[in-house]
Amino acid sequence: MKKVLIFVLIMCFVLTGCSKPSESNVNVEVSASELKTANSYEEIYDMLMTYLDDQEETREFYAVDEMVEEEVMLEEAPEEGSTTNGSSSSDYSGTNIQTQGVDEMDIVKTDGEYIYSFNGTDLKIIKPNGTEPEIISETELYEDNKEKSCYYDSLYLRGDHIIAIGTEYNNEDYIGYGAAAVYDVSDPMNVALVERFSQSGYISSTRMVGDILYMITDYQIWDFEEDEPSTYIPRLATDDTETLIAIDDICIPEEAASTSWLVVSAYDITNCTTLSTVSMLGSADDIYVSAENIYVADTKWVDEKSNEYTQDQYTVVDYLNYSQTQIHKFAYSEGDISYECTGAVKGSLLNQFSMDEHNGNLRVVTTNNDNSYRIYTDEKYDFENYEYLSDSMSNGLYVLDESLQVVGSVEDLGEDERVYSVRFDGDIGYFVTYRETDPLFAVELSVPENPTVLSALKINGFSQYLHTWNEDLLLGMGMEADENGNVSTMKLSMFDVSDPADVQETQKLVLPYYYSEGLYNHHAVFVDVERGLIGFGVDEGYVVYRYDDGFTQYEFIDDANFGYNIRGVRIGDYLYIVGMDDISVIDISR
Image 1 (cartoon, rainbow, N blue to C red):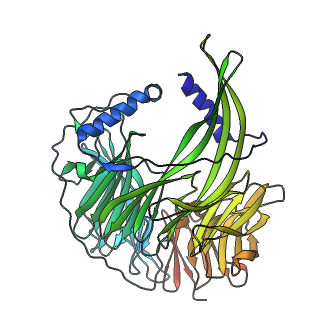
Image 2: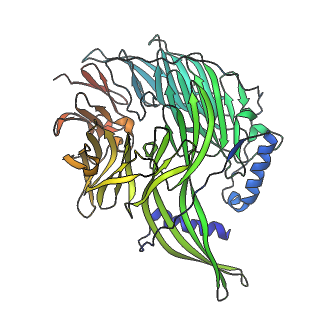
Image 3: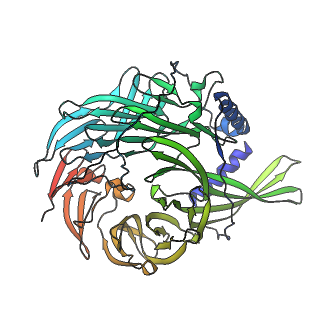
């Protein structure tokens, strides 16, 4: 239990931040365990038990009541199916996404003919009708019965199908499943459930490419029985069947370091079939999906012994505590998923934009926290004492090859600051760190083995979201601050990046708002570069700005659901502001 208490003390320093002077960073070698295909469920059980035995104190600290497992009839894993990818191009906007062609779930979708809005319980189908939008149907998607409860929070739209994403609970054993419910909306007045897919764990993220849904869940197991694989192996389910994940689809490390399962599955929405599944011991903090690969990042804290010696009656051990992110790569193509490799970098990620694939290489931006401490052990009196030594913070950019081996890096950037936003654009990576001023770093990445900082623009405040406007301009959305780092209200910035070696903030507009969902959720930001429009919810409504050699306010809608869970959707010359309970229209033809 002493080790647990020491760990808690360490984490207090990590999470609260220490003000003592920092020492120089210690270079840390990071590594990742090789994975292999499991041979049997029994092998997995033995590995899990060995891990839990090694972590007995931690297990006791986090102990939970034993769960009662439901008895289920388990079938063989479904065979692979096939699908065709389709796309369309029309005069309407889509969800603000990271990778072209890779859709992301959100609460509002449109196909140009209808707008589909979800408020957590009801699916509203809206006919735009120019300036007079009409809600033509409302369907309750929430389901609660004796056997299960289903809760959804996001949508996809593909042809005549709405796919609701959320969580399904088995009311017998209270185990949660990530769920995708497919609804036929070909008749807006008669929305009908077609099929429901689910897999063990809670949703980490999802993506849709064509008609294929890729779902990633994180499944934590606690108590399990050797003779009952269903208590420690993830499951796949539909409304009619339930299966354990096949042993050939499970990857395990040489030694377990977790009792969490990462489950990655592909579902054909058109034919309502499960195409493939891969599962591995691990968890997911951030998900990035390129046109060919799924990258799952898992950040852990590491304690590394750096020195050991004797002082008087004490055995003294020095430790370095730091964060390390493992990145797992899964290739995907038309629903076929395969585990490729695992790599690791020092530090932790901000969000999905911290990763980007380009020309086969993965570029990653992290914030590194180093915390050193010392433990004095008096073995005669069975006594341990803890001494904090120092902490430091900096940021790094790493380039990993196709095997996720680090081939280039630039480190120790923005000392005593953390990353607030990241955006990659071809051979240039941009990221913002902040403490008192806003350094916008521009890093040249055309030579993966030699990332080079071209410029570091320092201005007051910081950008929490970066958006490529065109090849010469980068839009920043964040907070203004004075020269002492005191944060005030929001601001919009336009950076001239035509010369990455001399990035300049050419335009800035300080806004009278303190909050926007868009600062933390890129789906909440509407950007139409062609029309020069930027829209997002704010403290008391929804605001639209126009950019044309400067920012000007274009429109403000007062009291639009107080700026939360509100989206801007363009159809033709109209911008529809869709809230939880109402909808407004802005004519953007003027």
